[in-house]
Image 1 (cartoon, rainbow, N blue to C red):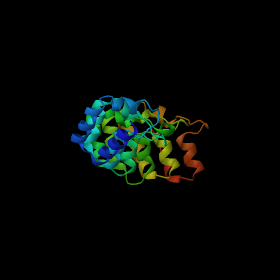
Image 2 (image 1 turned 180 degrees about the vertical axis):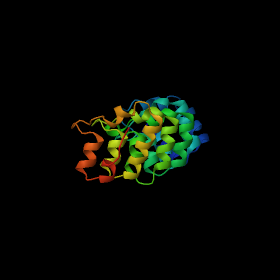
Image 3 (image 1 turned 90 degrees about the vertical axis):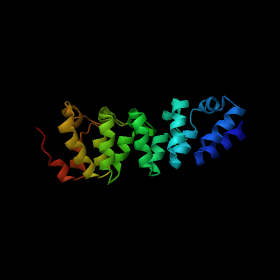
Image 4 (image 1 turned 90 degrees about the horizontal axis):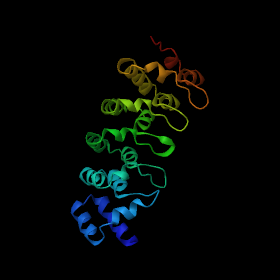
Length: 205
């Protein structure tokens, strides 16, 4: 069994769909065996990290549970794709399953939260919110929204974009802006504590 799993991992690294079905003929329950592990790098984790879209889509269709499976580091397949800069593949996967934006990994980190941590991700943030607007309500284990995270990582560009999107697109924007994390801090509290004067000076209707 371990030998077959190792072979399958190598196949996933190459994105070889034909070889995948060859090995499945040897053990039709191979994917089920892998799914029994609570934390594991599935073939979807491996192919997503490598940027093999057709193989990743095949895995998502055959084994939907792999989508939210965490590896030993707590990372989901779509998170690993983002971490490895496979942005085009992430966008292609979202065309088939927009709810991937809401898949929670370690500390309930979602792709939207991750995008808010990095400068230069405005196009990605816009894409995520376009395909799955409800993701703006998702919070991490510390009850932090993507806006909290943007300020936490001093990503004022992302913060201003998210605030602008909220005011234009989200009817319940005030609930998001006034949401407190587990320490009782709203985004304005965080802006003050980090001396983010530009964020603190934003005025809301």
